[in-house]
Each structure stands twice: as structure tokens, then as C-alpha cells.
Image (cartoon, rainbow, N blue to C red; front, side, top):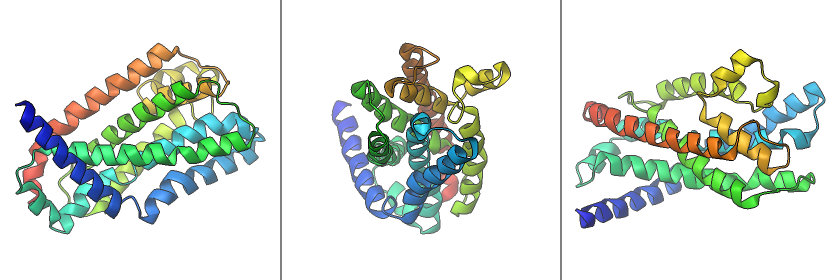
Length: 249
């Protein structure tokens, strides 16, 4: 049993290599992970006259969130349309192995992209007061957002347009409900209550804490919530993909 799990893990690494080479070198990752968050934050900062330093925690959160969810939702539809998915599942590989490879490749790129807003923060004189906490949060958050993105590709469609539309409909509202632009403490009670259903809320709260802006929730609650989201997203993604994967071939 142990050898079988190790064997599947090795095959997941091959999928990671494939995804990074094929998908994550494409312009959509740079656009959605770097340029779009930067443009959004720039317009929001100038529009409200806020200091750039105050927006850095949200910029880190949005960059990781959108990078990790940029390609994973469309990987399965692309594979289906190109008929490469049939070849992949005909090999001795489990569904969870494919999903784990897709998730891990997305998380790795999310961690790499997070360096950009951190460098921007340092350039504006922002002090990272707890770099180890922030580093662990970026890793955990990247895994969480990447696992969440697996749920967006459940529908057995053969083109990425449907999942891209669904992804946008879900991600954009979360952007405004997760304390990214407005700290949790400043949100109305109803909006703050709704924000707790978003994993981005907890990641952004940690980012605020590690950049010296203070957090609304304790670090224990933030990290516990992210870990719980990871397990829920993963269990649901594996179960639903096991049902829909045969419909793709």
C-alpha cells in the first residue's frame, strides 16, 4: 500500500512538470496573477486616496488567489478538448493523482508569484514583521486556493470558456467580500459575517498581521480555517471528479 502511494506521488510530480511547462508559462498567468491585481489596486488606491502601504496585504492576497486559480479550472477542459486526457487516464494513474499534480503545480506557481508583491511592499518601505508566518501562510494559502480551483473544473465540458465564466462569477465577488480592500474590522456586521465563508478572508487577515497592520482574528483561527478549507475542498473535489471524469472521454 505504501509503495503504491509513493508510486502515485511520483506520477503526480510528472503532472506538475507537465503543467508548469505547458500552462504556467502562458500570458494568462502573468495577466491574472500580476497585472490585473496591480491595476485593480492602483485604481482603488488612487480612487480613495489610500496609501499604497495600506493596500499591500490585499495585493499579496489577490496575487496569490488569482494566480492559483488562473489555470487549474481550465486544465481539465483543455485536456479534454485536445484529447490528451484520454491518454492520461488510460495509464495506471488515479484521479486523485491527477488532481494532486494539478493542485501542486498551481500552488508552486502561486508561491513564486507572491514574491512580486512582497518585493513591491519592501520597495515602498513596508516592513515584514513576521516573515516566517507570512511564508507559511503563502504556502498554505496557495494550496487552499489551488484546491478550491479544482472545484471550478468539475463540469465535464470540452472547452475552457464555461469554466472561465464560472471562475470569474465566483472569484470576483469573493474579492470584495474578503476584507481585501476594507479591513474586516471596518466592514458592516452582515458583510463581515458573509466574509467568513471565503478562504481569502483568512489569508488577507494574516497578511495584514505580518505587515504590521494588525489582524482582526487570531492567527490560530486564520490558519485553522485555511487548513479546514483545504480538507473540505480536497475531499469534495476528489469525489466529484471521480463522478465526472468518465463523462469527459
